[in-house]
Image (cartoon, rainbow, N blue to C red; front, side, top):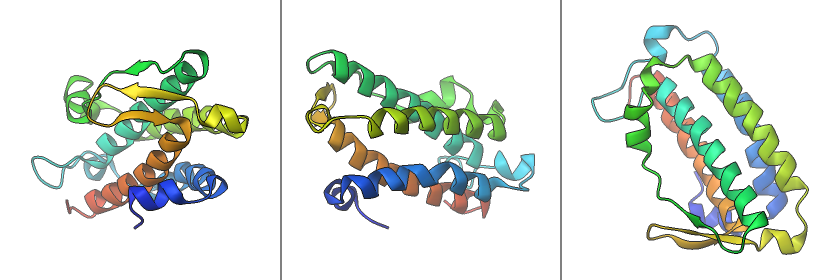
Length: 164
């Protein structure tokens, strides 16, 4: 699996293509899986497959909001996210995996439409993450997303097999 830095350096078209694959890959991974398997955590601290899907859905929403803000504001500040807190507070284990995937896929299509329409200068628009990551351009975020997707797809597949 590629590192985040390797994805950041990959051509933009390759990173966008990576993002376009994720919805179908997730759908294939959960096809035919029963509720017990989708909601079973491999251990007390690692997420169940449904939690991974909910995380991807909510993170996609967060990325899209950040992109939209960065396009209309000069270096907006982005609050720190806490995925484990989201999983607990939003009760991911109670969500329906198919609905989470459907929401992710719909939002990803919106994200891709927005990103594919950006001009070269727009890719350099940025926001500031209020954690240690600091300033990131839209192009930087694309690299993060291209790394993030296969990382969590792998996590989901391991969880389906009962492994962390």
